[in-house]
Structure formats: C-alpha cells, structure tokens
Length: 74
Image 1 (tube, one colour):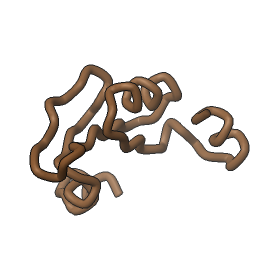
Image 2 (tube, rainbow, N blue to C red; image 1 turned 90 degrees about the horizontal axis):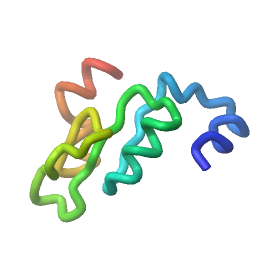
Image 3 (spheres, rainbow, N blue to C red; image 1 turned 60 degrees about the horizontal axis):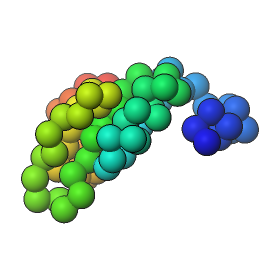
C-alpha cells in the first residue's frame, strides 16, 4: 500500500517519515524505505517501548512534531 501510494503521488519514501502506533507500521515503513519511523503511544499518556523497526518513540503525534528532534529534521 505504501509503495503504491508513493508511486501514485510521486512521494520520495527515502525522505519520508512514517508515523504509526503498531510495530507492523514500523516494519512497513522500514520495508518501504522511510528514513524515519516514529512509534506513537496509543493512550497519549506514556511513551511506548521502542520497537525493533522504529527510529524514535513518542507519547503522541503532537509530542513528536513539537519535539526538538522534529525541529532539527524539519
């Protein structure tokens, strides 16, 4: 699905960030070649343990995009 969307929309996956809340999302992002794979908590209260294919983990999407890490890469 990611590869088809990238082809249809002319998205450079090597310059893309995958955000997801399941380990499978991180695996899909890694397989597709996403440069960063951000694992998000599901309850907004705790940072999830970093799963194998994730490059960062945050409590929520809001925390991720407001982080110093995101400001450095954006």
